[in-house]
Every structure is written in C-alpha cells, then in structure tokens.
Image (tube, rainbow, N blue to C red):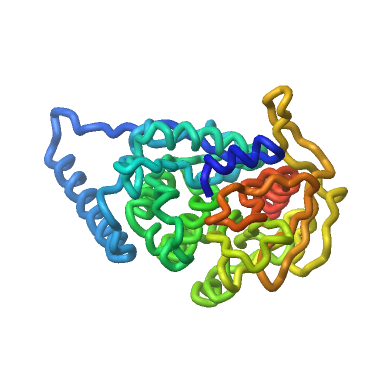
Length: 368
C-alpha cells in the first residue's frame, strides 16, 4: 500500500508500480454576431445539459469537498496517444507517506512528493497494460498511510469515501466525457488504488450501466473482493478463468507464514484467482509455469524480466495467493500487512502472466 515500503521490497526482487498521463482540453466561447436562432439553440443546449447534471447528482450523493479539475493537464499523469481499441483507467497505490505532525489526513492534488512516487509506481505496474491498451491515469487526493494504521476494512473503506472518492469520480466523469470516445475499457489499481476501484465498481458503475457494459475487465489487485460483497452487488461477477470478460480479477500475495496474521488488504471472505494458471481452486502453479517476474537488477539499476522466481497456490480459506519464492523479501510494514506479506510484489512477481492475460481478455472482449 505504501511506496516507501514498496521500494524496500522492490529493491530486492520485485517490481512496483506507477502510472502516468497528461493532457488538456479547451472550451470555446460564443462569438459576436449571434442571431435569435443562435440564442434559441443555446437555450436548448442549456436545458438539455441541466437535467443531465441534476440526474447525475441524484444518482451519486454525499460527495465530500470540491472535486479536482480534470480539465487541467496538470491533474493527469499522462493522457496517451490512442493506438489501441481498448483503454485502461489506472489508479496507483498509496504514495502519501507524510509522518510529520502537521501532515494532512488526505493530501492535496498537487502534492509533489506523491506525484513523484506515483510516477515511479506507474513504471512498475501500469506498463503491464500498455501492450494491449491506452493507459489513462489521473492524479487523485489520497489517504495518508499513517492515518489508516489500525483501521479495520470497514473503517478503511468508509474513510476512502471522502475527497478520494470525489476526485476519482470526477476523473472518471472527465475521462468518459472527453477521452474515452466509446471504447471498451479496463479498470485497474493496486492497494489504495484498488480500494477506489472497488468503490467505483460498487457505486459508479451501478449508476452508469452505459459505461459498465463496455468494461472488458477490472483488475482489483492488492485489495480484497469478498463473496459477501459480490452478493450485495449482483450485477458484478468474479473471473472464473483466463479469458472471461466483464469480470473482476483480484488477488493478494502472501508467504505461508502470514496465515492468521492481520493484513489490512485482506478481508474475511476474500476470494482470489491464481495469476499463473488462472484457476479458482488450489491447484499448484510452479515457478517454472510463471512466464516472468519483473525484478530489479541491483548492479545495473534497471528492471529485468526473470523466470523461475515465483510460484502460486490459492489458500481458499484465507482467499489469498500463497507464494514460496526463494529469498522473498517481505514488506517491512508489519503493522499493516503482517510479517510475511508480499503485497509489494502483487504485480511484479506475475508481471508477464498478467500482461498475457490482459491481452487475452481484451482480444476476447473485442471478438465477442
């Protein structure tokens, strides 16, 4: 969940995450020489726009604070050139790590330290989507990691319903209205970004079925999807294999010794899918079956794809992926994730399998 701890983990054998997009749009004003017909047309357009605004505010209520302005280029990490038929809307994990006494509970949209960490994370996570999709990633206001220590999952998800939710919804509104142009899309995140993706799936997509029907998949990695939550949101479905579409794909990675320990991203009743063999049962997938992990070469300072690093087997009872990677470096944030969590490796250990899976689901969605 936190970049600080991710970096410790990734430097010894994992990749992390980061995302990026930028662009801006402009409005034009009416010129001189307006006729009565122009005034009539303008009035009609205003009347048409107003009910839409009202309807949207009726559907989604309780937004906290003023949304960040996503018509500003600076509030996007990057807006890509359109080269694919499908987009990805990506939300990075926690990059707000301020432990000073004056630190805010929720960062400002223009927090430079957060933006720099988010850009690092994009490179290690969101790049996995680039081969098959156009990746869009907004900056958004985030919870301070120090604020959520000690929270249970219910408290954590409720806290994310503040300015964090307001920003993510505003970014989605702007993306769909100005960037998407009717293309199919993937939702993706990690850790805090996946909490926000879960909130989007559970509320925003419910009130926007016109968008949801174009969702090729949602990769909610590094935070739990539970069976009870799926029952509460019956229009959503969890992936059953490697090629079904319109589904949620989710897992949390742990070492065997984390069983029974508190992990802030693992809820009771969690479910996962194996990111190597894409099965929902406890069939073991060896490291030899892994197509490649994204690992830091400490000598060159660059990331490389290496095979044979990580295996995977579902713990059905706990709802996580168990990995017995040799020399695994567990996160040092024990009070958050437990003593044997591989949270920082959720993407990195299964990078090439995930890349291929994205390609498979995208192709299948477009075909069908």
